[in-house]
Length: 485
Ligand SMILES: *[C@@H]1O[C@H](CO)[C@@H](O)[C@H](O)[C@H]1NC(C)=O
Ligand SMILES: *[C@@H]1O[C@H](CO)[C@@H](O)[C@H](O)[C@H]1NC(C)=O
Ligand SMILES: *[C@@H]1O[C@H](CO)[C@@H](O)[C@H](O)[C@H]1NC(C)=O
Ligand SMILES: *[C@@H]1O[C@H](CO)[C@@H](O)[C@H](O)[C@H]1NC(C)=O
Ligand SMILES: *[C@@H]1O[C@H](CO)[C@@H](O)[C@H](O)[C@H]1NC(C)=O
Ligand SMILES: *[C@@H]1O[C@H](CO)[C@@H](O)[C@H](O)[C@H]1NC(C)=O
Ligand SMILES: *[C@@H]1O[C@H](CO)[C@@H](O)[C@H](O)[C@H]1NC(C)=O
Ligand SMILES: *[C@@H]1O[C@H](CO)[C@@H](O)[C@H](O)[C@H]1NC(C)=O
Image (cartoon, rainbow, N blue to C red; front, top):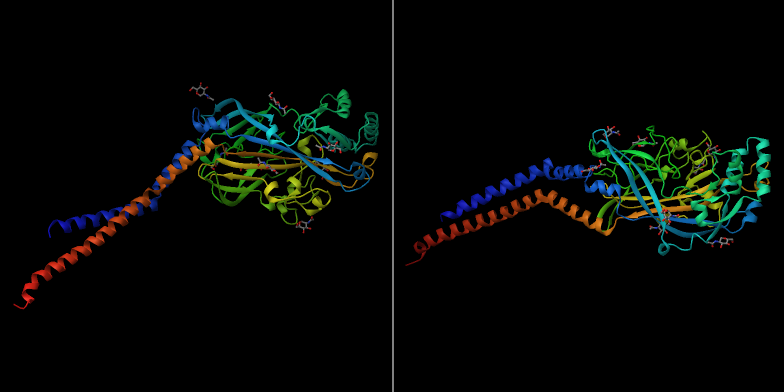
């Protein structure tokens, strides 16, 4: 006896202190706050920080893949038949995104920059050669001119005469490169001669290579982490109903490489802004792991595409007011200089079956045609994403034009794109290390609790053995007395 009880009680006291401390730390969330505050401080646009450099020149490769629909039965379509389309591609381009003229404003609360995208063809990831592959598709300039002329009989006559002279019809056959990056169009050239503000070139991505689309002003997140990279101004216009040249689908609120840190499952990610009264948004679907990084997957919920009967809020997409096309298609004509362009998911995924049934060759599926964003919740970093959009042309019979005399009313698919990004291995390793450190830090209260429990066990063992020793000792003292002599 002697030192033993003192050691036992010391251990007991330590055990209680550790358990109380750990519970206090857990209740007050001290270490979690330490991690969260660290992240909030790091994920800000500040000069000479890693976050700033990553934002200026994002390291993971972005790929833009185009798939075109080749019309196999143009004569039948002109005579009122169902179009038969063959998907061609992908034609894959590496997208280099660079920010220039970066300037901090308003005490570093905002930063302005020009963002330019450069597209470089990647043959290894492509099927076919855009320079030589021919695609027969809707002649967008012709349909656009028809739509512009349709309200005046004299303009109809002029336009019809122009089409005949130039020998153009509802369909045209061009190389993929021409359709994307632009070609001198005979009809537009003739109009350009009289109206100089009309471009004589047409291309779905005409003038989009290497050119910036105007100055953006972003919030740096220094004032509030939730506003990190939120766009507040574009081309000097801070009204929120602007649109961009990029198919009207600029990401609203953020600039697409990162969202604010500490993303929760209840967050709604605003994106695809347009002038259509409200923007599209993505909501939480499930948790996943990408290269070992935990992510939340956000997708466009089907209500986003639903028709007005199912989701009355979508009335804003019916332009002009009351003119609703149905689920899954958006009229973006106003942001395409009056061209009758309709946006949808590829193969009319999540759209009204009437659009799918009207075209032979549509095979919508979730895996390939859904737009999704995989975001690491702690940092808000975009780990993997695919933005998938189909460009269609609205075709209908327009009185006075023999080209459309017999055609059905159709939302006619021209091409779709998949703009995707996947975190590179170096960035993934860095992020994983950071996440590990943050997990260790947040686990400190549990470690303290574990130590407390361990000491508790030792305390119990010591108390029991002490008691046994004491009993044995007393038995030993009594033994001689009990022993018959
Ligand atoms: C960042 O700081 C450096 C000097 O440390 C300065 O030369 C540079 O102009 C700053 N950049 C911006 C965008 O303010
Ligand atoms: C875009 O511009 C870059 C640099 O000027 C050039 O290397 C690239 O080939 C261009 N891409 C296309 C599709 O023309
Ligand atoms: C598309 O169809 C046209 C006409 O049938 C054909 O000449 C062309 O080779 C097709 N394009 C591709 C990429 O297969
Ligand atoms: C920044 O975030 C705060 C809090 O979420 C919000 O009240 C404020 O309006 C935001 N600022 C801008 C310019 O969006
Ligand atoms: C853009 O995002 C902001 C903030 O989330 C939202 O208030 C605004 O309505 C959005 N703009 C459009 C055009 O949807
Ligand atoms: C709206 O969508 C629902 C479900 O897809 C469908 O049953 C209904 O007929 C549609 N209404 C209109 C007006 O298209
Ligand atoms: C698309 O919107 C434009 C402009 O608001 C309108 O003139 C056109 O009729 C609409 N197209 C369809 C098919 O509803
Ligand atoms: C992009 O999406 C298409 C289908 O829409 C798919 O075939 C392709 O593999 C995707 N590319 C990447 C890099 O995810």
